[in-house]
Image 1 (spheres, rainbow, N blue to C red):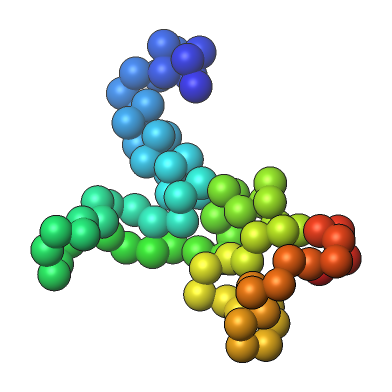
Image 2: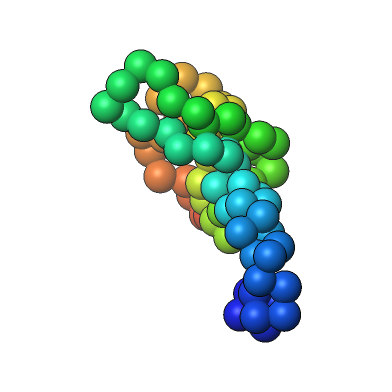
Length: 80
């Protein structure tokens, strides 16, 4: 991002917002200390942050197994 930000300083804030949404799966600022915030969740199951561990990590809000499937470790990470 360094070269882009230096070349296009007027666009770097927007670019970082887009890249952050891809990786985090949301835009805005979620807050746990109040009942309202400006967070908007976007394409949550496609957030890039889950790709590196997709063979071992369940994407939040999607169950990949039966009730309490997480209680026992998988036989192998690659097959679960």
